[in-house]
Image (cartoon, rainbow, N blue to C red; front, side, top):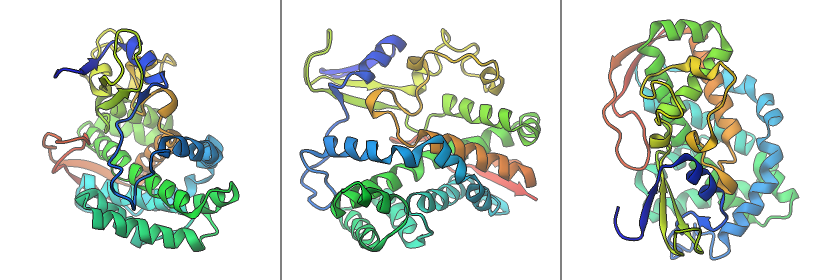
Length: 325
C-alpha cells in the first residue's frame, strides 16, 4: 500500500477499528454547494439515521412484503440483462418504500445520476426530490418533517437513501440470479424453502459483497495507527478467510442453516460499527422476497456468464439470464 494507507484484514482488528468513532468515511467534496451536507454533515446524518430507525425496523419492513412481491412478479421475460433488471425491480421497491408512493421520475433521475456523476445531474435530482419533499405527506419525508428537520436536510436524507438503495442491493440481486441459475439443485431447493432462500442471499453477500472495500480516515490516533491514516477494509477478502469459512471460495448456502454465525469482522457486507448500513434489514428482506417470488413462478437459466466487475461497485457485468415462465 502507499504511504499512509493500511489494508486491515485481521477480523478482530477490522471489527474494533470500524466500531471506533474516530474512523470516519472520507469527506466528500464540500465545494458542491447544492448536494453537500456541509461541515456539520456527519453529525446531521447521524441524527437523521436515529430518526429513521422506526421506518427501517423489521416490523416496518415486514409490513411492506406484499408490495415487494407485487413488484417482483413483474420481472421481465426472456433473456434479460440481470443487473439492469435487478436495478429496475429494486428501484421500484425502494422508491415506493422511501417516498410512500411510486415516483418513476425520481427513480429515473437517481439512475441517471449514478451513471454520470455530473454536477448538473446531481442538481437535477436534488431539485426534483426537494419539490417532492415540499408537498409530500407520506413516507420518509412526512416522518422527518414530524421530527423537525428542515426541507434541505430531508431532501439530502431522501436523496442519500435512494442513491444508496439503488445499485448496491441490485448488484446483490443480480449475483443471486447468477448463482441460482447456474445451479438447478440450489434453485429447486430455494423455490421450495424460504429459509434456504434466505441462506442463498447471505451466501451471495459473502462471496459477492457489492461494496467490496470500505475506506476510513482516522480523525485521531488509534493504537498503532496515526491520526490522518487511511484504513482500507475489504468484506470481499475477509469473507473468504479459510479460518472463518470452510471451503471459502465455494458457494455453500447450507453453511447459514446451522445457526452458527461467524465473527462480525469476518462477515460485514453492510459494514460495522456506528456507520453500519441503516437499510440492512430492508435489503436482506427485499433480496430474499424478490428471489423467492421470482422463483415461485419462473425458471432461471444462464445465458451469458458475467464479466469481471470494475470500480467501486462489485456487480456482474454483461450477465444474461433467461427468465422462463
